[in-house]
Image 1 (cartoon, rainbow, N blue to C red):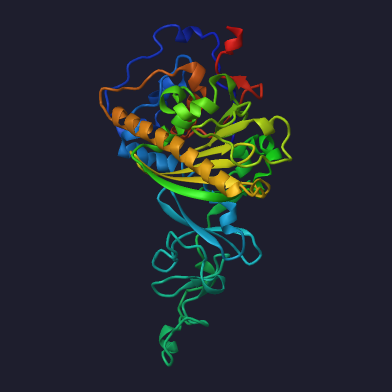
Image 2: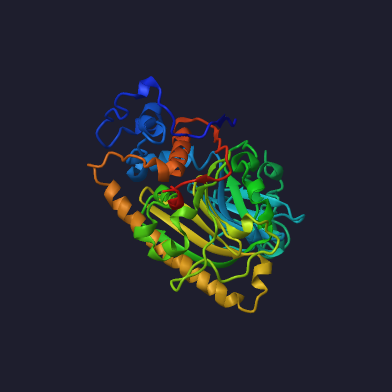
Length: 448
């Protein structure tokens, strides 16, 4: 079920909050049983101009991490890759969500399919993480006992059928056709819900999930002019981050740190050009407009912009954190995505992908433009990861009990952290957004 709730605003406070808004919490660490209790998050539930961050255990505790994987990552849609990586029957990717290995492929009709990467016989992992094709003739074979499945997940043989390599003369030994109480139709692969939006590929581990559209909210409408389904990956990099995935996300959601962490980015992404850009949906959003030109230190130029964009999109950069773990940056001439896979409470494996529309690659200088963009994003990303690793080190100090939000800069963090709190206590709802499409995040210097 989804419930629209109003966006958090800085308004007059109810009388109940005019006293001390930060009653003491128990000393760290908390009893893990408290992680699903609403009172544990009462500081974060306050209006953003009074709120404090999530409890430190949310970033450091192995017990919180284990519970979060189940409460957050098995109950909703998680971006795991790119639609272009499964662009025809038999193509596949093997991804991990909440510790489960998942196969995503297309059947003979080109329809998207997802399965747990587990043989129904004795649980052998079927495909390796680097698999790009399901197997010969679109069949998924177990390497242990040769049970075989098609790309709809149906069990085809166990293991007597063509190409099974059973030694000549020994067929009778392996013939299970007479097995009592056994029907191949009951032993197909375990299905997983999969879907796409734009160039992104999503997985949902819930048994009966709500549609992806319910989680995306108004994002498909906001990005309609970009024709994201036509964009394709051009460069990929992987980073091993010694920090909780939420710290990576919260760093992405605010510009407060730019002057000190990103001197190069700060030259092409001006404070006065930043706006909150979010409506209803499981995401946080920001916008920079107008898009600034490159400096000697680099920037977002390098490819030509998509010619069919409307005037607003043609001069704006959109920065969206897709709940729970994906950064999506869309500029007029390229996109940049960070897929963050939580490995432990203090470790994240991040895949960074640079994408472009085919039209932007038609210019003879496109290759050098891609290299420039990849180098600039690598610089910015390494600066971010260095600082979030320092945050991880600090948040593990038992003396730290949480910090105050800075409402002007950190409303997106407040929105995100309340989504996490909702999931941990078992509330299913989609936050509402701002009434205005653009909400200025910083005072306009011209009005000072």
